[in-house]
Amino acid sequence: MLLSSVRSLIPATAVATALLCGCGTPQIPGMTQPHAAVVAVDIVLRQPMGDVRSSPNTVYFAKIDNDDGLLQKQIVRANYVKDSRAYLLNALPGTYVVVAAYLNPPMLVTSSDSITYFSKEIVERSKTTVGEGELAFMGGFEVSQAAWLDQADEVQTHYRNVLSPKDPKGIITQYLNKLTSYRGQSLASGDEEKARGNFVRNARKDFVGSSWATLLN
Image (cartoon, rainbow, N blue to C red; front, top):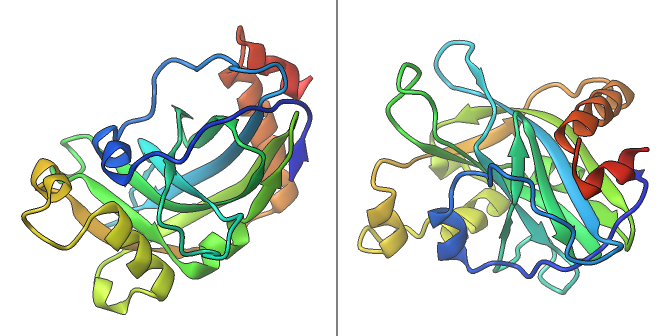
């Protein structure tokens, strides 16, 4: 889904940098070029115990404009997160998917950080193309966190290996030694137009006072 103006560049980050920078940037970045591009997604995680729903601290995107298709070797972290809405501001024009979400929950909920790797079905459904001067909304997703990574599909397995290598001696694993990994499974899809309307309404508040507000006029 495309919503009006913008453009610009953000290179895919190195994997280690992406994970070590876990939380979304609290301040909204400015436009680096006059016609910057934006990719956005609305993600709600439903935790495996009880009926607790949480907004991730950040999400990870992959740009799929090459022969690797859905299985990219590099990811890029959202650089602005507000509630359940994650934005990749100053994005390179191209085609993107959302692949994972990181959650650092309140202590009252659980003491463990988590990363949820999205199923192939979610990743494919999120595929969105953004051009110069555009904002692309991938949609709204409610994602259940499921254990048993041995049941992960090929896309989940791939991005687990990219974001959190299995080697316990790896620097990322040592830094995030309390990280719990989940499979992200899509719950029943909601009304797409309603999700888009809610996103636009909330994005206007998220962008107020910034140069990005012109995208939603």
